[in-house]
Figure 1 (cartoon, rainbow, N blue to C red):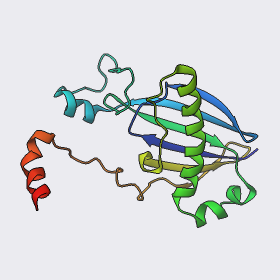
Figure 2 (cartoon, helix red, strand yellow; figure 1 turned 30 degrees about the vertical axis):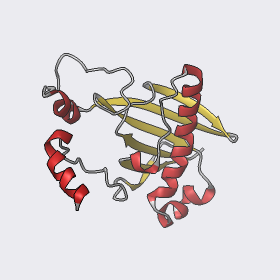
Figure 3 (cartoon, helix red, strand yellow; figure 1 turned 60 degrees about the vertical axis):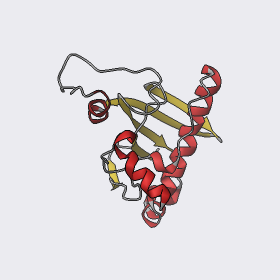
Figure 4 (cartoon, helix red, strand yellow; figure 1 turned 90 degrees about the vertical axis):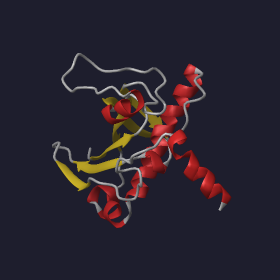
Amino acid sequence: MPKIIVQFSLPIALIEQGYYELLVQNKRVNINVVYEQNRERMKQMTSFTLESGGGGNVEISRDAHGIANISKITMELPGTENQLSGTDLFETSSSSIKLECIKYFNRLVEVVRYVSRQYWITPISLREIIELNVAIENDEGEKTGLWSFDFENPLLFPLKTFEQSQVRPTVDRLLKS
């Protein structure tokens, strides 16, 4: 049966890596979570440079801010006839497919929160999806890509951040103006 394959990135590492099968409203969805080392953020936070091909990965338990890792998510979604023909997917923005992904991913978050009692794990929103790739896969495994970038999200391009202590004079000045 044809399916929609969605791959996206989250700038956080909330859910443990692995393969998850969900059943939501009689729809079966497969979710695969893989961490990717966030070398830029680690360097910014620790002043250490992580070399690729080194001796392993840095792991931080409860890495909700993506300091060590970002999450790469792959979802296999059931599609409607119009989605599988491409008409619905081409006529709408990436937001509609994102909303579908958010619904399923947040169900996973909800169950993990409940079972683990880690209530600080928060649901994701549209804003957190920073990279999007959507494809339709037919019964023979052939994929037809629809889009592979998401210009709706301001977090797509890495932004240089500043320590609050460095920008405090500017903050104070703006607060008084």
